[in-house]
Length: 175
Image 1 (tube, rainbow, N blue to C red):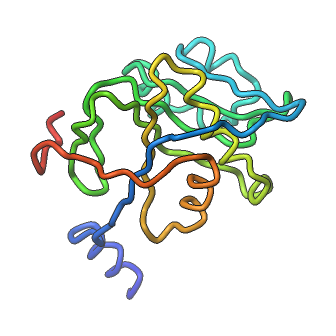
Image 2 (image 1 turned 45 degrees about the vertical axis):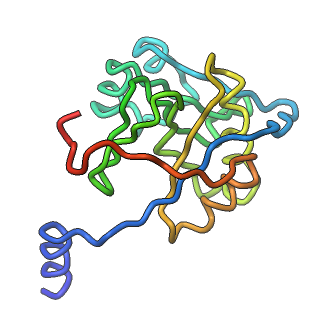
């Protein structure tokens, strides 16, 4: 009963999440063989790639690809070791804080994940640090919850420095 109340309370009054932001300053971390980074921008390529876990091949991922976001992952040639998304629009909405980024010159990357069996090996940092070289605009921004120290360590190791994010109007979920 206590857990049910907690779930209802969190849904009605979500806990306040504080985010910190970083911008890439480089240099990129070296990719040792056989590691490579793959960026996918089409649903057909995404569906056909056998290195992408089936759990990611869902309606949410399909919508992101249709909205011009790109899926990026680090692989050893056999499986995805760490992955995330590159935002394809101009105003990035951060649902955790109900705000929209006004940094239209920067590319926002988000929703990164490294499977537990691949954590603490530098894969997340390697992926993050090499994303700018795949893009026309190397100004890449990433955010993390302030309590997620593991992610923040990886972001800093990847060559990102703290960045003061500017926001458009509050409660701008209409973007």
